[in-house]
Length: 64
Image 1 (cartoon, helix red, strand yellow):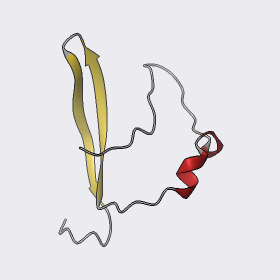
Image 2: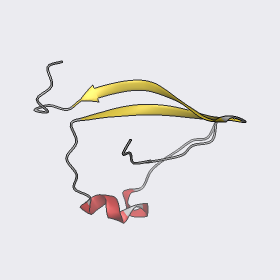
Image 3: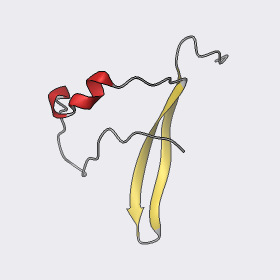
């Protein structure tokens, strides 16, 4: 599944994102119809991914 990891956060940490830290994002152009927010938890057997939310973007051609 194609994806972009925007951030990794350890538990109980405050996070702020400065777009100057990721200058390539300012020029990134991709077609997106929907996006999902995942939580990942690392276990001894590997990562376990849980979908926290799914959003279809306006004009994506999907009936919500």
